[in-house]
Length: 260
Image 1: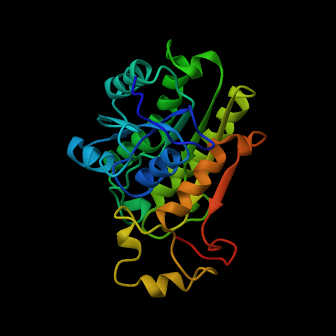
Image 2: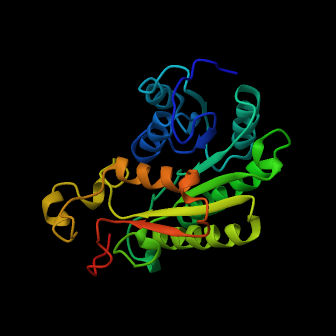
């Protein structure tokens, strides 16, 4: 177990797993949790990018395990590594997601659709199952918090990314159902962002950021730190009476009638 972590805050002495953490929202979440005292296991597909991400965080605060979120062997490796290095698990953040398809649903390649659902929905469930079932982690003792990353597209259809929205609607309902099943010991919530300035969402705003931002009452797109702050709240004891909620973080887009 690494003994070099000295951070103090809401997560002092606690351990988290953040999937899809090599960049963007996932890395921002990891950074926020570390800044408040957590030890974090970062996971993502590419080892080199993962190590680069880890190098931006305080030494001794993170470990990394590369692999695909929908790979059962990878999930098992992550849980075993966290058990060996940290001895417990307090927070699971399901951030990994994909969107390889763009266009009308009636023209969607069904193999691509299956992959989206496999990664965005079934893997989210599988990570929770693994955290609950692992014989050596804190979740197996009946306590912990889960925060899933959903999307405003799960509530309001967005042109061109319909299947992504379908998958995120499933994540939102999965969140509510898991909260009902796992309470009171384990809380499960989600954050639903609108467009956040990341490489993942570039196609939605590249070359037209000012125009897109004008549809938001806050007159700007989201920053990864905006989502990280919301995740930290839901993962912390400050939200100890909150479960089964999907917190929309969208700069007012949806109340103004906009779509991502």
